[in-house]
Image: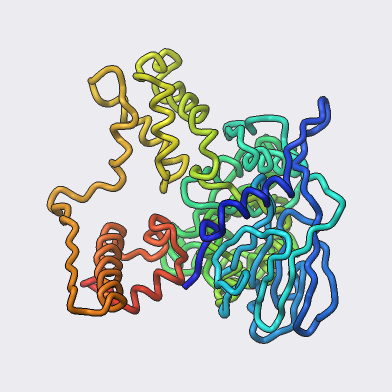
Amino acid sequence: MRYDSRTMSENSRTNNVAAQTLVLDRGHDEPMLRVRKTKLLIVSGPLQGEEFVVDKDLFTIGSGEHNDLVLQDTTISKCHCEISIDQDGYQVRDLDSTNGTFVQGVNVTAAALVPGSEIQIGKTRLVFCPLPEASDIPISRNDSFGKALGRSVAMRRVFYLAETYAPTDATVMITGETGTGKEVIAEEIHLHSPRRAKPFIVIDCAAMAKDLIESELFGHVKGAFTGANADRMGAFEAADGGTVFLDEIGDLAPDLQPKLLRVLEKREIRRVGCNKIRKINVRIICATNRNLANEVNEGRFREDLFYRLSVVQMELPPLRRRKEDIAALAQKFIKELHGNDSLKEIGHFDNTMDILKRHDWPGNVRELRNLIEVAFYSERRPVDLSALLSLGRLHTAHEPTPEPEATYSADKPFKDAKSDLIENFERGYLQDLLARHNFNISRSAREAGIERAYLQRLVRKYDLRSADK
């Protein structure tokens, strides 16, 4: 069984934060996230005795040559794990590796790191060692970037990166759960760039039919395929001088990945059915809610393309990790959707915000915006936002909500009875979860807050399949 950072003791986590991170405001200079520098001491494995300084806010480890720490070991995945830093200190996160990441002997998906933490990956054992000196990670002084809003440290770090790299032509990869605002950030990067007067073209790689996406990206000539009745330029040509935003890049078909790599390397394309090479002048921004490192490990996404797309990486935090932003976001959406005077129609605003902060927000910022949009449709005043929090989790009208059912058998050993109860719970929970998401594993895993690979194992364990599959 794997655990997340909540399995770590609260005392250790509190000490970790106090010892390693501090937000500094330096007057007219940019504020900083001051971080205690650390190193990884390899105590066993092929590189035994060597030391590596963790000098980035995202430090990757794996057997792939593009990692910050490359470990040549057949038991280690190409993109095995990563160490990140935020206002809560250092964390290690497994990247859905084949053989897992262990901290203090426990197989984890994510865990806080404290001085002396021991990390085991494959045949290599590392010790997490703080250093005497500190380094500063800059964050933005601003609590917004165009339409994107956030006072939390996590969002101000995103804003700093956006402010820094928007004026450049650097390729940007934006990651984060569904509903965190990836397209908003992408468009604002374009609007804050020298390309702002040129087109911003969005291609949703997940929504596009597999047999049409190549034409959408690169264009086609007349007669290239059935229905191609005229020449047509694709997104890269149409965006000349501007930006192409490839949303859900993790869904890009494997046969198109080398063609996209050529665009990045050569800045040229070929229309479908044509041998003529056309030069293009575009910036590329990508986004995904998938773990692309895992897609690389599984061979579904090219490693070289992954790194070419990730020149600048921005990870948008889920709303549950930036709840201090909820009140400001709510006020913004209320005014945008219902007018400046509509705030007066909210009953007990401060108390309502306290209730909203206790919600887990599986749909993130998009869920908050939808809730505020729907709330004002009611004729009841004052508007009660908190009354609508359960809307996204209701069963359909023809599906009565099942009553919880638990049976206990005292004639069994405690361990066996407990195991039976857990299995009954898991089976019932997963049946309901999968049915509500039409057996879409990715969406189900996101709502449940568990890893996709773990959910797949449970589906196989209980032989849960859609009736029409």
